[in-house]
Length: 117
Image 1 (tube, rainbow, N blue to C red):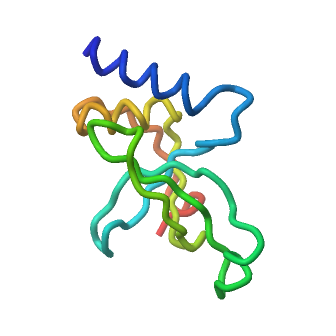
Image 2: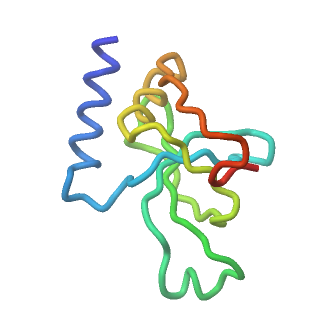
């Protein structure tokens, strides 16, 4: 557990400083295909040509690889296909670094809550 905590702490200090604009929310997206879910982090909303060439609003998300969350994929996902989770950024990173062993307690929303499918 201490090695997981140390890794998460280092990642958070690097990427999620209070003055940083990266990693604002923890998301659940279907990736790498429909029916397979993964944790991702909101890293921004595209502007300019990226958004101009899509027919719907897309979000820039970072899908980290485990157990090293400093590497991963930057993908553009339609906003309508993103589920925002209630876990903190730190909890999301802990879950990724621990390979899904350290899972935060659920903060259930009522049925039909925001972004529910």
